[in-house]
Length: 354
Ligand SMILES: [Zn+2]
Image (cartoon, rainbow, N blue to C red; front, side, top):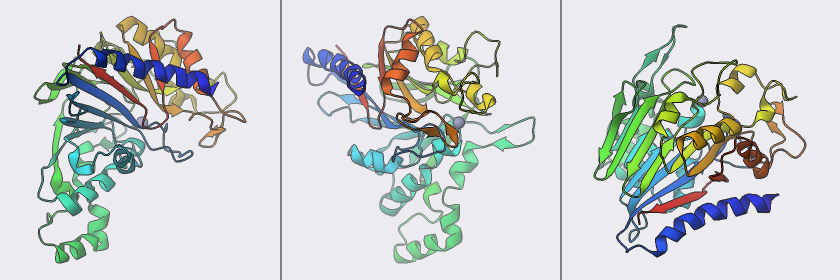
C-alpha cells in the first residue's frame, strides 16, 4: 500500500523533471515543499506543524531567489534547516490564520533570526486584518507578530542577550518583522509582489480572519488553501470546500490544501466533533474542486488523521490508521484524474517553465 503512494509521489516529481530536460539553465523554477503535514494541534511521530515553503528562482540557482513560507507550525525552523534554508533566507511569511498549529513556529524562527541577523533584512509578515467576532473576541495576526518576543522579554533572556551584544535589536524578534495586513474580501487581491512573483489573497471560512493565497510566477502557480472550508458551516450544502478557494484555484498548476478524511465524519466511529469536521475540506470534495478548477497537482497536507495514526488527538481512527492510498482513494471517488501528492513532511514538487 505504501509502495503505491510512493509511485504517486514519483509521478509528481517526474512531471517536474520532464519539463527540466528541455529547458535552458536560466529557466524560471518554482518549488513547493510541504514543511509540515501534521493536522491540528496533536503531534504524531515527529511530524512538523502546518507549513508550506514556496521557492522561486531559476533552474540554475535551484529556485533560490525568493523564499515564501506559508504558515509556520511547530518545527518549521528544523524543517527549513533540513532543506538547507537558513531562517535568515526567508523573504516573507504568510498566515492563513493564527491558530497555534499554524503559527507557533514563528517565535522560534524569528528569535533565531534576531540572534544572528539583527542587522536585517526584515522579513515581511503578511496576513489578514484584525477581525472581531460576534462572540466578542478578536483574532489578531498583527498582535501575534508584535508579541512574539514577549515571553523572552519577561524572562529577562532578551535583556541578558542585549547586554552581551548591544547590536541586537532592542525590541526583540518582533523588530525584525515588517507586518503587512490586508482586508480580505470575496475577490482575489494582490497582497505581496517581488519581481516576477505575485501573491494574491482571498477571504475564506474556517475561523475569523482566515485567508487563502495564490502565488503566480513565470514557472507556474500554486494555491495555498490553508484550513478553508465552505461558507455554509454544515450540511446540507454542495461541498465542504470553499467557493473562494475554487475561484483562486482556476487553472492553477498546484493546490496545497488541508485535508480531512471522511472516516472522521459523523457517520464514522471516531466521535470527532462534527463542527470541527465540517469546517475542514474532505479529500473527496478537494478532488472534485480540483477537477472543476482544472488543477494539475493536488498536494494534501494538515492530514486529519495523520498517516498511520491510530487516533487523531483523543479520537480513535483504527488500529493501524489510514494509509496514503486511503486518502488517494477518497480523492479519486470524485473523478479527479490529476496528480495527487500526500506527504510526508518535506515532500517537494518542482515546476520549470518550458
Ligand atoms: Zn485552524
